[in-house]
Length: 147
Image (tube, rainbow, N blue to C red):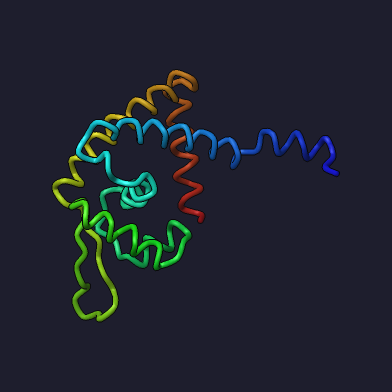
């Protein structure tokens, strides 16, 4: 049986709270797609697309960063290619490596996403203050650099 100390900790642990917020924000992003040319794109594929963060990136880096299999990453990328949001090209001098790039249509989604993310960040600033929001951003950047 779990003791009160662990129960309290698990009720307010950073990971769990971040997961709840991410789920809420993802639902908002999914809603923003509903009446657009991106409505048919799977939510999970949009999350793979978001992982690119505007970068041209090797397919192998996508699966490593997201923590799932190369096959799952390849399938998501293939679906995004079929939606004309990404292109895949070979890395010069490599028979296996592929680079994933964002298309013009993908850039249109990034514009919609940026607007939605600005709304989310405005609500964070409302809750934490502008300085608190930027401290949160810097803390997350530090954590990302360490992982």
